[in-house]
Length: 259
Image 1 (tube, rainbow, N blue to C red):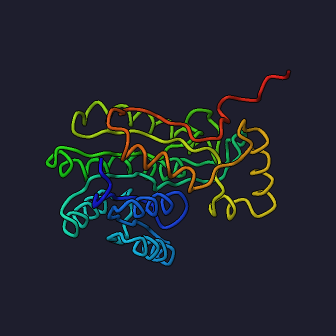
Image 2 (image 1 turned 90 degrees about the horizontal axis):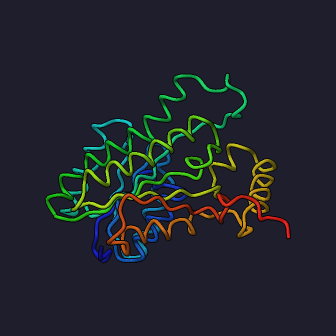
């Protein structure tokens, strides 16, 4: 895909990885749809940063767990830019809950997490597919997580939802070919505001240090670093579909054997 003048919707793009992806795309000449549910101030700041890079920008407040909102966002992108070339399903929901404490999660927690992480991603794909099919080409990247592979992460519900998203990525890659490619990126722990606010400064820094110590590349990820593989899957991976790429500083490899 040529990203110059392409139109890409990035859900959950007010902050974190979504914001980093939007800005990477803007730097390559793409027009971007910045989506948020609550973080209006941050969404406007991300939009301004993209505009400074020369991008056409549409800010859209929408909850991806609401199918009508998903369809409205796709329609707004088409009305503004005339097409949709890419979709990055980045919007996500979680809850920090110790895995060993089975009372820490309720049925409603599972429903809320799945409604965004799985159903929301599906609804966004469904909303953009007719336009992409009409154009004859499109690319979708689902932002999953290392949690889907290891069963770790902020909560069991989150890990399970990302495992479902990986499976859905393969299903959709078959269903939407040959016009639309569908892939997933699985970041490990990233240095983000969400973790800092959820854990507090002391626990957050301890987690980042421990992760970096365990990772073969000796570093925790950043949104900017994880954004690059996402953009590559849109731009430079014409023969890649149904793939899941781990972006985790090698943590999935486990500890290095002693010498």
